[in-house]
Image (cartoon, rainbow, N blue to C red; front, side):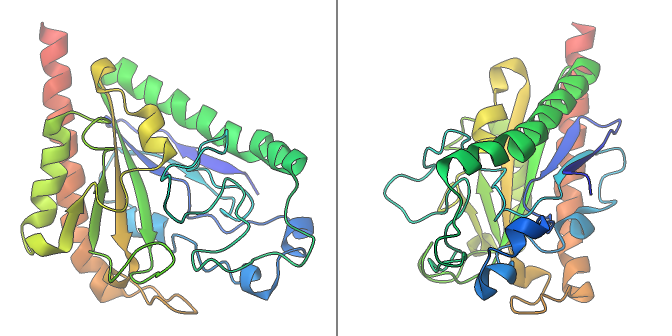
Length: 270
């Protein structure tokens, strides 16, 4: 099993998928308790959901489960949401705040570093390389980080999550045009079902790579899983709901690609 996969495309859009993988090495899996072995906090079916929506898009996806190491956390272990409940670089609890390891089996500081070097660092090296390749070709690169989460998780947020949760770290990880394309298309059908920079402002990936001054833009899309799947075991994909959602996601990605292509062409013609 490869720790990650890279599909090199021809578009200025790169789809990041850090949380869709379910691979856990056997020696680590055996240390997870029954709750942990359920892998409930997976971004289920995220690759399937986005597959084929934008012809030519690059994809960089981790195959390793976030319980091994979270590819969307600061590698130094710094919290992305100070003062709010969250999970760590190597999680010790699930999204409900409950232990996922057998007693005494949570990873040590040294093991966290070993996992970071084995999985987190290579994934991000590949993502950085692909963004740089795309930007060299087009003069611009847009990282669209694909995420999903259960709609109701009291440990992380109050109430029911909106379907579309857009994160740009308060409009700093991309220019306003990129943010505006995504925000406006999400709001078309039901403005109340979209949140911009609410509970999810973009994880470490978005904040680390988003450098609009260099024409590398990053935006995170956190989808409520009810919009395309069952939010309880066995986490079934809902083909009908997914098709409806995919129509909007496709419009978003195509809109971003058109903007990036026009902007890139303008730079080349300058």
